[in-house]
Image 1 (cartoon, rainbow, N blue to C red):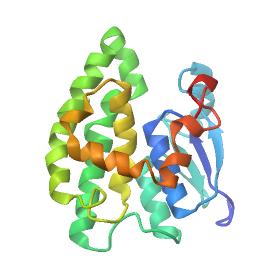
Image 2 (image 1 turned 180 degrees about the vertical axis):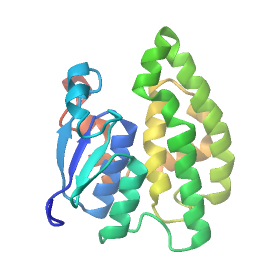
Image 3 (image 1 turned 90 degrees about the vertical axis):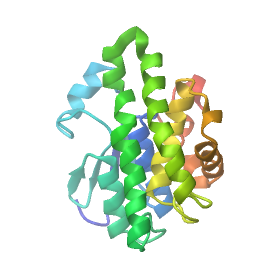
Image 4 (image 1 turned 135 degrees about the vertical axis):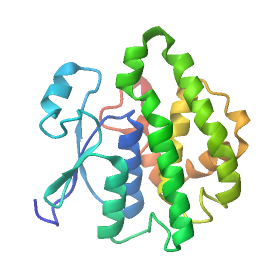
Length: 213
């Protein structure tokens, strides 16, 4: 694949990891093609296995390689494409962005992964609430220390890209966001930004009609 060929995002409308990549592409002004992967249907996953053996979204075909983890994709496009920088130049702030991103992407989100909650079954809402609350109780005081207008200071970063989809998951599982005023404020601010609007799960090619904006 030539470097000037549009990236191809294999994703799912409600996948928070796919949403992270869509936000990053929007912030960087990257045009891309989408291939929808229906995570609910086994057939879709089997066909997708040749792209990503883990059968998880997102997978991005870009510059002749395939990347299968959202934070790897975000950091790759930040390093190879012009536009807004998604990681700060300052080493301390950059470390804080990575810390917050990893806290969400490794410490909270995987426990509401579709595969996990399918295994949990009837208790999936209680399970998801427990682990989101556990993560947000750690994240809230961290963000009180690092946040300005956004998660780390006054520039949008990878941390913000991770935060908004996680709050969407929290609201989906009926977590009381009033307990987390800093997270709630940041999320409300970010949702007013066009890149977060156009990438929203309600605005995707595979969004069901009853969930479309």
